[in-house]
Image (cartoon, rainbow, N blue to C red):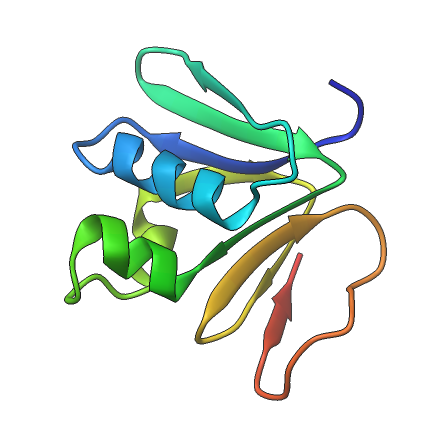
Length: 104
């Protein structure tokens, strides 16, 4: 895969559900899920996104998008977060909704 970006999640009960939410939010992208035992890499080329809506649909209404940070031990690419989505990408930040925050 060229230019892989995405989260690296520590192994926990929610990993498969998070991967399913990411797949739902990226139907047009080839997503690679690599189980390394203690952690799981979820990658796509150039850009990957997950929304709070999809995470809640898979993990329950009480799941907060900020809870993803506690499970994510690392990531590839740049990460852009807002209250309703997390996006991993290469290069400059894509156009974002007001209220989003950028972390590198």
